[in-house]
Amino acid sequence: MEKRNISISLPSMGQEEWEAVKEPIFSGWITQGPKVAEFEKLFAARHKVKHALAVSNCTTALHLALVALGIKKGDEVIVPAFTWISTANAVLYCGAKPVFVDIDLKTFNIDVTQIQRNITKHTRAIIPVHLFGLCANIDEIKKTAPQLKIVEDGACAAGAAIGDRPAGSLGDIGCFSFHPRKSVTTGEGGMLTTNDDALAEKLNKLRNHGASISEEQRHKGPKPYILPEFEMVGYNYRMTDIQGAVGVVQIKKLDTFIDERNEWAKYYDKELKDILWLKTPFVPISYKHGWQSYVTYIDPPKSPIPRNDIMEHLQQKGIATRPGTHAVHMLDYYKRTFGFKPEDFPNSRDANNNSMSIPLHNRMTKDDFWYIIETLKNIR
Image (cartoon, rainbow, N blue to C red; front, side, top):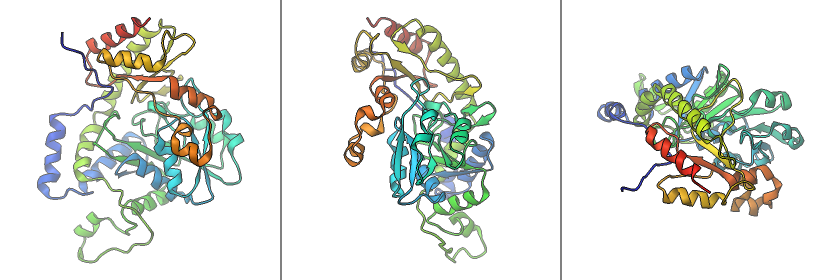
């Protein structure tokens, strides 16, 4: 029998995306241009924001968001301890200090009850992470820390929402990723969202070296030979029009992708509920999950074998898995630089050691889901 090979994630792309990239390639305009602008417009409309600005990836989006908000050396920014390293790294890029807060193990998102005790006179902003596609409780964060600017790390959360309010419209600035593991992808790529006109103008300049106008505006203007003014120190964080063309196709499929994933997540929930050592994802009432990943939690006292042994067993059966993400305070650089110990953030430590993402993507078949469920049930 041929061995199974169920990937943790696969992008859902095909002929439409292939046809879309031909236009910028044959037009000769392959850097940021009309296709990026079209993608931005569609993304903004879907996420109910005034402005969407495409960038090279979500890490650069986070960096630009903090720069635009004036975060600098001596400032502190609150971040959850359990997240991808980019969330904290972006704070370091600005010379500021990331201040970690533990998570709620039920949601894997920042524990709002612990935010206030970590605010000092140097705290300027907070980066709540919508981890795995579930929005952080932004309303409670605003009540707890109304003085802080909110940068949503929505890397996993395109299409997610609280009620009828989409991710990216909840804070001051939203940041998204289009990495291949996300629900929609442009290969690499990111997006900034905001309803603040002044912030949008600043972000637009910052992503393009600090130039007063974009290259497209200059080339199509009456004097393309005149270089723009550079009013600030900026960065080259632009998206290409090839990626933008793919994004235009992908964003139109976002809701279909999420709806499909939601149905399969419900199937997982139903079929896995009787495995006593496996906790399935929690979704609060009125929240719309983006389902970038289906992340479970292995309960150590109840589990027949450790998490890593389960992952190895599944790997041997042809089922790819991953830890949900990592606890940043347990990574070498952060341990050495800040002197953190694993027990400093116990829930993040436990999520680091016991979370397990199982396959959930739009190229899976019913047989794939059935096989994963039966394999998990047979672990003794």
